[in-house]
Length: 491
Image (cartoon, rainbow, N blue to C red; front, side, top):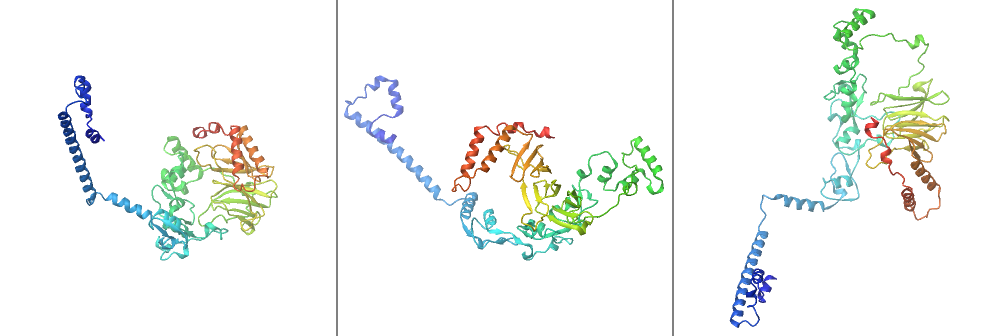
């Protein structure tokens, strides 16, 4: 454009500025100037235009030659990026995807990218049965590993059908090791005093061994012996440099008290007189129930007597609840309830002896007492807690207690609150009670009883939108986060 204006005989910007500074010369630039002067100006502007066009042409030619030149070997990243884009754009059929040894390909479907991409491995590869893995045996992991055994009462459940995907997952789901052959490694110090018989490869250390947190921080003989990997008696004998069997109880206690007063020994090595319940209180052992002692579980965490005093409910680390007759023990097993996915922390039967509540760290469930996992009506309702605060983390369950209304339970939560759970209508209310939260609960209940929503509103979109409008109208949940206890207050 600048060159075109020059050819029209107009002065350049620099000359125009110069003319403004010297108006007397601007007056001389009149249209009636002589023909020779006008011709000189035309030749001047034409020459400048030709020079400008030449510079532009040379620059363009240099750029074209540079772009047509072969790429230097020092810049492979651009080629690699284009190759990866072309590979990601490739569409593959699932039967052609190689899923490896520890998965199998789907017969239908497509994926985008190379075979090893996350998209193809997720869409086209599925779990494989442990018995169908070619060239794999549990003995290849270690001499103490063998095929996994399904615990009693869990046969047929989906999570125990020995299906896996990926090498690490298959080694965990298909095989089991023994705690007797497990060698403890830091941060795990020593073998547990009562470890399970078998363990999973990825958790053998935590199942069979313990770390310092297991011993506690108490200044007593038991904690010190635990950190040293010894029994309390063995550790005390080593500290006192004397044998317990060589002296009477009074002599042993006198020596222990003397060392404790001198500050050379923590308390706990002394022996106390403990009343024998069988002799002094005339109690006797009637029965033993040992079905919770599975291959990888050894602990019974809760026991409750069903109203009527003839049956008991028990739960343990094996993720099961058993119902059994008290006077018969193992012989009197009646039912097992096995839909839980974590260790059972508490069982609590309702006063009507028809339902009971079982709690784990993840959820609470209400069960029908007279049914087990093989009955369709065994589970009545499940409660998985959620914290409605924005950005709040997951909430766990600490316990479950049934109320005398038979339809309501109190569920303890790890966020310092409790939930009043009406399990038959799937409603719950956090405690302490906020009036607005209770009002929201009533609105939800009223909406649940309303039966005349349009038939075409299959996903309840209108119902949800109207409920959201009511919450906005009455400012529900406003300030809810500020009313919750903070982490420091909870601690």
